[in-house]
Amino acid sequence: KQEVTQIPAALSVPEGENLVLNCSFTDSAIYNLQWFRQDPGKGLTSLLLIQSSQREQTSGRLNASLDKSSGRSTLYIAASQPGDSATYLCAGLFMYSGGGADGLTFGKGTHLIIQP
Amino acid sequence: GAGVSQSPRYKVAKRGQDVALRCDPISGHVSLFWYQQALGQGPEFLTYFQNEAQLDKSGLPSDRFFAERPEGSVSTLKIQRTQQEDSAVYLCASSLFRNLAKNIQYFGAGTRLSVL
Image (cartoon, rainbow over all chains, first blue to last red; front, side, top):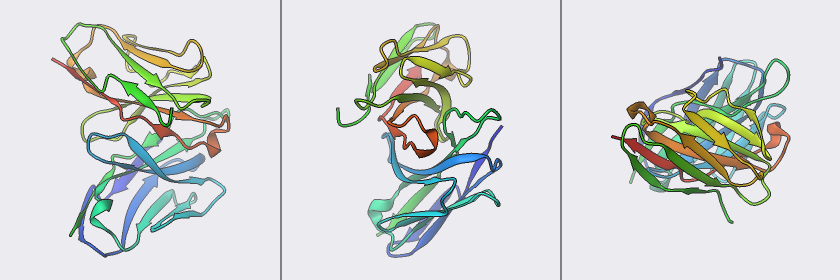
């Protein structure tokens, strides 16, 4: 069974700092990896999707990388703001042996607090 | 609609009651997913539809859980004889493409189920 691990579980940094969230996975047979943001009591908002053939994706202050060989992805947040405070989840879409896939496999998330 | 809509937002059930949770996906989205998120955990995959066909139900925790999507649009997740361990947030997601590698899953706000 695939496993997705996120470290750290929680992170608190002052406003303006650049930071990196880490995600690791055990199975290299991956279709894509997605990073999500979840605010308390809310659903998940997709931030970035990296297909298995890609190395990174960028959106505004966010940059996500994917290294299938090492089973790692990182989410880089530049110039953090208090509004970035949320739980960040990474999730992989892994392949069956027959080439299909089911749903996303999620990590437990990193709870991020940006101090004003 | 503009996004994935789930109802009810909150449901309190007495142990042993049956519940039905509804998901309205984004119009035209082919794929629909159900996930269960326990407190402090990442979402866990339950089941997946492509149009009206349920392609994978390997994540359903017991035979008390049943999902349907009879017309390929709205989906209902039914839980029979609810137990306390069923208490969680149930998230629905939809995606446009049949090609899983390229699909971004868009999530609803979820239904928070509390079983007393």
